[in-house]
Length: 417
Image (cartoon, rainbow, N blue to C red):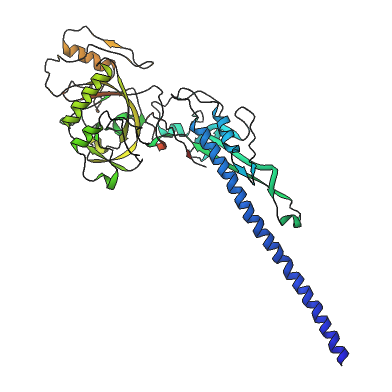
């Protein structure tokens, strides 16, 4: 009997050992898996951070300073910025062949399809008279840099998974940085406290730099409301409207002192501010001698029904040339109309007129620069009016990507993938 009991206990100890062995094995496996997964998550984040840094660095310099050419050096900048980052205390792997291949590429990002198309071209496409949708679907529009980072030659370490035959893990991360049109505007990106109405610089919903417009005192609804004064205020939905003194202080003072955010309302004025207007004229005369266009970048706001109110939505930025400004007094004899004006290189030649009748000089002037009302008729000679032509030439970008196509590309890219 005693011998039988001892034998039975021995058998149970054997079963317990087997059970413990069966339980411990999956526990060890799960622990190893958890540790290795956590480690791989860290390594993956390191690779992604490196790819992000490289793509943003390349896209930041995707174009040269004036926007006339795509910068082939953007690839090297992207590569060097990426490999400055480490993974497991070693530089990340970025394969680059010196051109536009491998893991660093310039190309086109489409928001509609969420795809990146490599393109080695250095020629910028025409931004004028094309919609944002047209550009989004055009692979010739170089607007992004893609960077891929790897851990292939030196796989991520395996702490416990090698027990199960995994000596290391090859990982990969990808980032695409997009350089679009100016949306969020950094301080001093726009130069004067004048907001241009979005609707007046579009033709058939496409940006056009071929037709000029005018801003007047708001007394004539058929020709006004193409823009208005702004105080750049976006606080509390721009309550309180604009103040004449603060608007005047912003004229020729460097531009927006604070960041302006796309999609948020901004304080505007649908009437005249004579003190600001007088200062603007004095600045114009000092800058140009009234004989050459005055170039500036201005914010673009939405103006439903061609009417600007006391608070409008910021949509982007546009670069314009102020062609002429009329003063406050009546001039029925057209005595103060221009006699000459420099042109815009590659867009419109210089103009001059020896006509003795001012009205004939004015008609020649507005037709030469294609200055029109919002209804398409020729711009009249009206008091307290600013006549401007959207700029068709490349210029230094401004702002953070995110706005619509009003010709001003951003200088700060954003990550889209």
